[in-house]
Length: 221
Image 1 (cartoon, rainbow, N blue to C red):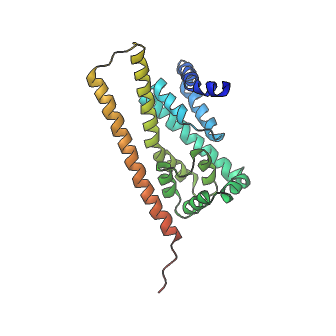
Image 2: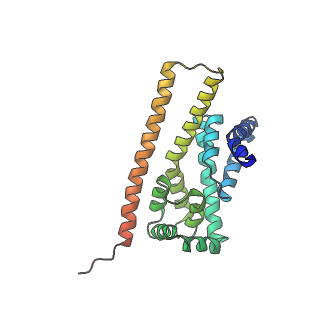
Image 3: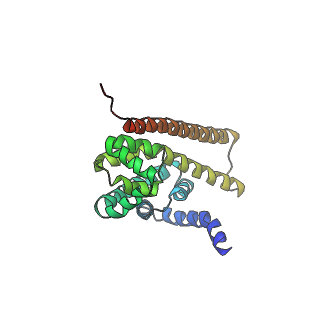
């Protein structure tokens, strides 16, 4: 029960910590980016941290800080998987058919598949960074594909986090919001969700076609 209670308190503790980070001035973004890099390396899910960034920093700063941190963190994990943890990652791939299939597709089409996988993650973000390190994709292509592919999801989580703060402020009577403002927030959220879902569906279809083509035997005359 104590463990459950602690986990229920995580969002509050996280917001307190991020508020402290935001109060560090110039060093605040540096600390947040460093924290995001660490959770990528240690394969800790970053969705709660991204939501917290939206709540504390707002949409624009939260998106920028998270985008920088997640891209650098994914790159560090990628390089670790390629140069230092290759044997360990290969064992993980060998025991998971889905990861093995995706590894094969990335090996054939490189950054294109990585971009689609970021838009429609079939493999958990935490382990995928290490898996991509096994492929022959160039680091520069990996960084660009990862950054672009993570933009929709990052924007969605940050936006939801910022709305959560608005609701909290309204409940505590710390901020008054007009009907027009709420309408803009709701429309913005719906548009972001719909756009993200649409992008995910399109990416998943393209990824399925790409992997199917990889599996098809060559035509014979």
